[in-house]
Amino acid sequence: MPLLGLGTWQARGRDARDAVRTALEVGYRLVDTATIYGNERQVGAALAESAVPREDVFVTTKLPQGNAGRERATLEESLEALGLDYVDLWLIHWPPGGRARPDVWERLLELQADGLAREVGVSNYSLGQIDELEQATRRLPAVNQVEWSPALFDREVLDGHRRRGVQLEGYSPLRQTNLRDPRLVRVAEAHGVTPAQAVLRWHVEHRIVAIPKSTNAERIAENAAIFDLRLTASEVEELDALAERH
Ligand code: A2P
Image 1: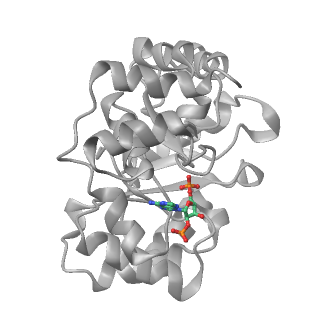
Image 2: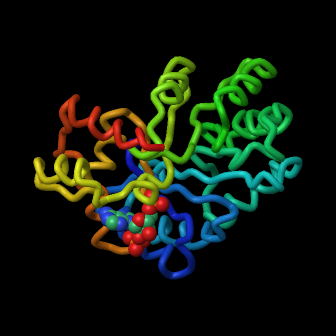
Image 3: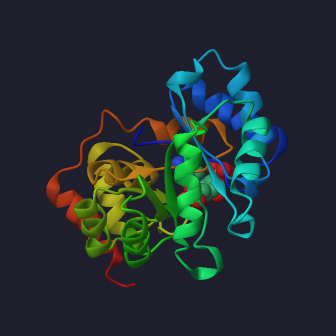
């Protein structure tokens, strides 16, 4: 799974299609969508018109919690909209009704076994809810996608995922962070990068998948230009500390 992807929440219509096309052109190989984003058709159109081969792109979509019980039909509708035979990752978007629902998880595992999703996982689950799934089925989700950023950094949550072997994927990496925070600006300036780039690189240093959303071509490119950048251990710790006030 690539460590950086394009988020598409709130990207609609032509904007969504252009954003995904631009992202693939500038080197993104992970695209994150969801049934409830209402843009799978546009994401699919951009994938189809891209020169990047299907197998080189990691495509994620998600089961709306209200579609629990309609898993197969929902995934088939997503695949039809995306124009794909399989997704790389299918997630339960939220714990349905606030509960872990091992029965729903069981059906995701069946769809994975049928080849419709290469990997399956969850989103917005607590570690306790992940443990419930594991206890009921002996199978852990490959990924848990949760809101994550320096301002939301939580060492226990990060370590808990690592111990279980569940990949943490962070959504809204930029939205919750004050990009003008002087401590962040200092780290960014030391490397001649933007605060947004420092935040995204911080995710990579922690081996957390980041999926910044942008529909602006310049920012899409800016957000991916982080692989020549290395933060020192003390800079990573300084950014971890941005969570202290929360
Ligand atoms: P835009 O789509 O106009 O670029 P998140 O992924 O954390 O939810 O953040 C998305 C928000 O951050 C969007 O409003 C997006 O706006 C903006 N954004 C994306 N990339 C950057 C960047 N490099 N610098 C500043 N803002 C950004």
